[in-house]
Length: 185
Image (cartoon, rainbow, N blue to C red; front, side):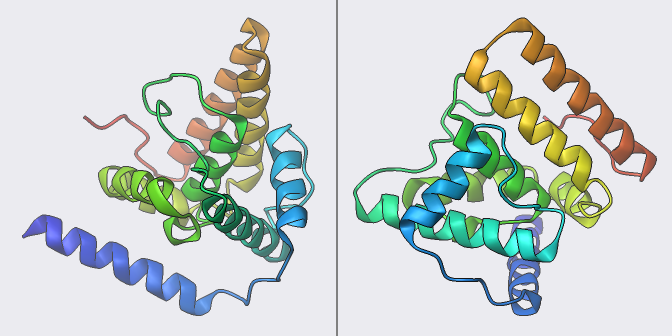
């Protein structure tokens, strides 16, 4: 029963967010790929801390996911993300975009959508708390994204420390806002 109520609440939240969201700008698959690749290299081709930047990012993810799906390729591949195994920088970008609420599971296609829906359902209470404060911690989340991408690209100890520092800053900020950041089993 509780699981059904949780899923219903999740569905209602997604539907209400979609109803209030501005129309997404259209872009070509090439434009979407350029934006995603720029973010996957640690750049900031759009400011996701603005509603315009979030709309561009979401449109890019949606367009790129559709193009990759149509080409028969799974994108992004989240396998190993929770276990700490190697993943692509694009998976880090998308995972943090999902956490912040800048994109939704329905923006993805195929197996990636299923993986994200399972992850979101398992992390739902914390995810709701983080999303409720995502505007207040947006800069910290961008710093985590950049550090995470740099670490995935280089796998160096110094980049790992940079990522750990960025995560500590984000966790401290969320804790200050009353978000329970303790890991759940």
